[in-house]
Length: 215
Image 1 (cartoon, rainbow, N blue to C red):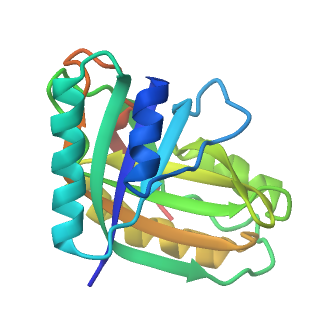
Image 2: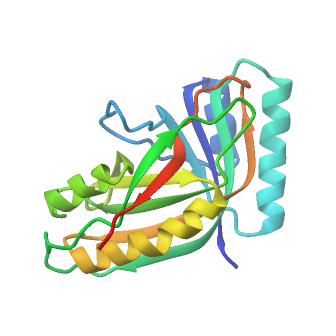
């Protein structure tokens, strides 16, 4: 079975909600060193249910609790299925490998939510700085996440399932051929359930356009 995740992402989250999340088995997994363009939430809680039934029960309970106790969050819930979670072996960085595409980002309309997302996670300090720069130039936005080994940088592209299906193999191939990524993984997380605290909540941008580069 594919791994299941439930995340709680919020700019505001009450003490009561934090306590309820911990009792449900969530753990705090906040991002660090907030960046201007990272779109990383101030509060980030994670649960990895062990079954579909646990996934549904925890998600439904949270939605019910939040709707019965308004004002405890300014943010959103996302329930995800993870069909792809692969490690990419580190190779020597080759600056001659061209980037495969450039993304144009756009905002979701009120009432919409992303369908899927790609995360490329690597060691910020040990990965080649030019590779990290090029991933940003391609249109992926990043955030810093504490790990056992130090600080990871997580690069993200998200939007429709169609766009993610097109981008994933090309992005994976680029990182494999260019090299320079230490402790690198590439992951797809598909949205199965979602809930937002208010209809006009600002959400991270999605892929609006893809410009494929000729090679």
